[in-house]
Image (cartoon, rainbow, N blue to C red):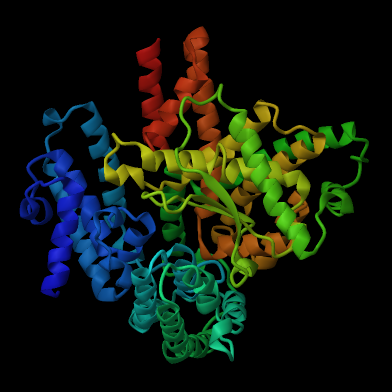
Length: 602
């Protein structure tokens, strides 16, 4: 490490901890438990320049050099991370509970949960796919560079060029990861690799100026307050980096994926991995933060599918539809009605974005009687970048930058116009933006009294459970204004219930891709393009899809539990404060928090 980089790191730590004795904080057991918590997140931040660029915590202090660097993805770095996690866990457990107050004991419990989980089952550390149609370096790197890397001045533009030049090193590290998994037999299905090829092939353009890494930032550079000669220089350097570095990387990826395909097959589930059944159970525990088995989750899904479809049939009957026909025919016929869709034109897609923004404003103004808090950060609606939309979900959320330079972002996938039925837009808005992901994630980051590690905790069952719970809140408050809206909301919930069935079907019951597609298409009425995207998502991300419904049902149960216990003393604002103030946490710990809330207010 260079002296300059070392000094920059020390300066970073000093800024973050407000002058605490740096060497004690970073390299030894800190003076206090609170300082230790800071130390853990500082270590992680210093270790990930891309995370620091995303959060923009250091830029207000004039610390910017990390914006020229990329994360270390090497196998050797994995070992460093594991050793650091082990050390941090041992230090954490050395703090005696008797010396901690109630908040600190909760912080210890939460940190221990995450660190222990990271250390458990090292035999499965490489049981995932770093290169898929849904995520992977080939998607993450361009998306980070064009969407997250800030270009507000000439220095940041030069940092952009530096990161392009550094891409070869990071790509070579990613190749280490791929070959490690190949040795273990962790190889994606052939049909997944074919989708990766379909994404790789159009990325390289004959003219580098047409590459997303050039076209995606040219307007930002043109808008800089700098001499035209300097802007021309930067653009020329970007063009050269694409030709010299990026295009050869993509050629290498294409060659590797073609070779990997010859070693792959079409088995879809994690059951095919060595010790795959046990591995999948660890994924279910991770994503649901419960001890539910695959069979329990599968049966819960079947039960929820039946309940929700029955409710939908009642509404369809009220609307005059023939409910005697098979459910798949009914919902697909309904979904085929042209009235549900925008024009399949650029203007139609632009109108979708405008209407999403209007729905956010409407719900944000109408839920004041449910929440004491709302995020300071705004939320905007943006289109999923076209180079990655074919493999991306229908919508997703990115958190705001901590320095206020970037709002929360609700990304809408406009690839297939049939993927955005008007009747489903309200539910998706409430899920991804308000009061769903934006309220929860932005508020979590903004909580001044939370230790840093809790500001960025990412327990999927809590986060996605809250977002699905938020859809129910929208319904309960009357924002599903028509029967069509209600069908859309129920279809959204049905979609998450079906996920319980197909995820466990694929990974525990050895369902094929085609079996899973047929079940989801027959039971949801979703556009086939969305069904295929979703099923292939579950295939490459075992267990992740199960957290949504388990989390939602848990939050609804805890709300009912508190309401029943407290009676007239129950305050929905206070309940929502309780859930949101603490940030994401395992559902078992959230239940303990609700029990304490009930006891304190009885």
